Structures are given as structure tokens and as C-alpha cells.
Image (cartoon, rainbow, N blue to C red; front, side, top):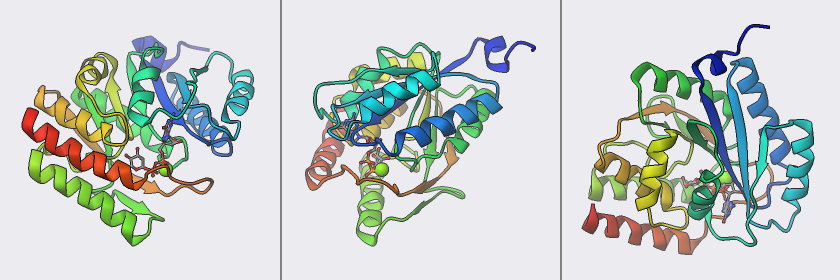
Length: 245
Ligand SMILES: Nc1nc2c(ncn2[C@@H]2O[C@H](COP(=O)(O)OP(=O)(O)O[C@H]3O[C@H](CO)[C@@H](O)[C@H](O)[C@@H]3O)[C@@H](O)[C@H]2O)c(=O)[nH]1
Ligand SMILES: [Mg+2]
């Protein structure tokens, strides 16, 4: 066996996977990640940040650690502390020089990761973000209300802040680790607003961002944790950034 492609360049990709009640989705997403990275000969790890899911997600994670030795770090927290802070928590333990953030409910399919990596390499980008709102990107399985909320959230932030990125609220992204370390330090949002704030700040700091169209498919198992209070938080977040950035 020759040296691994990923290893030869010394690149390692750490996937930050926040979970809250994802016991049924976790084995499949990990299986797909392993398949994708193995096929591409890329070095990888997953950092699972589980917020004390009552459905026993952590038991599944522990079993998966045995199936994929050395690939899975489980970094739980005691309770549901929100998506934004879950990323901050997980990042401390990432050992890769690149970080991928994605959802655990296979709304974000790992099949898009190789294209993100290729594009990053080609242009030396600091961030490659999946986009549902450009090119072949799209959303499948959402009702009209949820589609409207997502589109509205993007349009609102884009109008007020003009960051020039087509999908600000999406959370399927590839970052250079030092870039994420830097931007995350100035990001204040605790919940879903986090993605938008992070991207707006990254652009304001002058980081180079590219986009890969993705199809976002609504989860099969379990339910979304996005509630009405998150939407209010989001609107506040946009206006706050408008004052600051
Ligand atoms: N650890 C932790 N994980 C969480 C929490 N809330 C949600 N998650 C995890 O975060 C991922 C996304 O949560 P969902 O509840 O499935 O989000 P969604 O409604 O599908 O929202 C999607 O679209 C949003 C807007 O476009 C995105 O902002 C969001 O990240 C996600 O991609 C899932 O893996 C879920 O288990 C939390 O408080 N703590
Ligand atoms: Mg989801």
C-alpha cells in the first residue's frame, strides 16, 4: 500500500457533528463519512458534540467508536446548550488542519465533501460553503412555511449586511482550521444565528469564500430543533451585526 493521498499532503479533515436526539441517524451518517473519506484516501476524524440527548445518542456514539477505531471523538455536554456553542466546544478538540461543519441528520450528504475539498484546493479558499440558493442547489422536503422562513432569513441578512454569499444560514461548510479559530472568537450567537454571524464576520475580515451547490434534504428520523424563539434571535442578530460590522 502506498502512502495515503491525504497523508502525503499532511491534510486532515475534522468533522464537527452536533447532535441532539440523533440516535437513529448517527450510524448512517458516520458510515457515509467513512465511505466518502476512505474512497478519496483522505485522513479524517469526527468530533461528536452531544448535548445530553435523552434518546441515548451517546451510547450509539460509543459503539461507533469501536467500529471505527481512532476516528470518532465524543465530546458531550451536560445539557442542550445550543448549536453555536456546540461548534465552539467541539472545535477545541479538532486535530485536523481543516474543519467541516455539518448536520447529523443527513440533510447534509457527505457526497458533497469531495467537491468542497477540490474547490478549496483549487482556489486556496479560506472557507467553502454549501449553498442551497445558487446553481443546482435546492431544498427538498420542507413545507412552504419553513422554506419561506429560510429564504426570508437569507434575504433579510443579505439586504441589511450585503456579505455577497448566497446561503448565509446553511451550516454545511469547510474551513481552514486557523480561519475558523479566528472567526469563531468574535462570534457571539449561541443558536442557529451562529452560521450567519460567522460568515458575515469572515467576509468582513477579508477571508476568501467559495460556494458549492448542495441539495438539502429534510431529515427522515426525528424532528428539527428550530423554534420560533430562534427566529427572533436571528432577526436580533442581523440587526446587531448591522450596527457592529
Ligand atoms: N449539540 C447540539 N446539537 C444540536 C442542538 N440543536 C440542534 N442540534 C443538531 O444540529 C443539527 C441541525 O439541527 P436540526 O434541528 O436538524 O436543524 P434544521 O431545522 O434541519 O436546520 C437546518 O437549517 C438551518 C437553517 O437553514 C441551519 O441553520 C441548521 O444548521 C440546519 O442546517 C442536527 O444534527 C441536530 O441534532 C443543540 O442545542 N446542541
Ligand atoms: Mg435538520
